[in-house]
Length: 147
Image 1 (cartoon, rainbow, N blue to C red):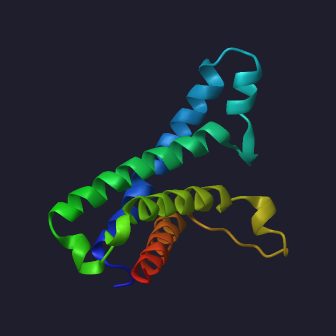
Image 2: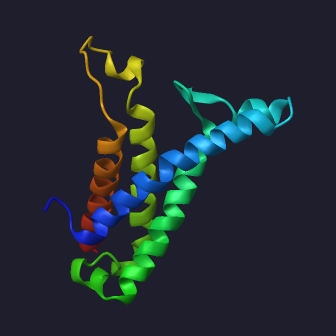
């Protein structure tokens, strides 16, 4: 297995919750906010059709879900087996997975980023998001083990 079960769960949660909530909140912000500076700011496109509010919703929702999952896994004793809960790094692990997933969402299917070397690349975000989230969570867990 590439990742331990708790780390893989974070990647799956990030994929399951992040993109749908980002899409929904981005559309709601652009459709329901009245014209003005708040709408311009929240509906601002970061990359392609990805909005600031959608990316923020992605990070917030997946961070909260990852924290809940880590807390629940901790009750079952699974976290102690891989030492995620060392020195209070649980929030850092959850946040790393959320931010990496959001960055992967921004990066995938972006023509400017993917074609900067004129390579015909196409990445599926359904593959990249959980892998990026799990890699980030594993990296932060590795840092926690150093303390």
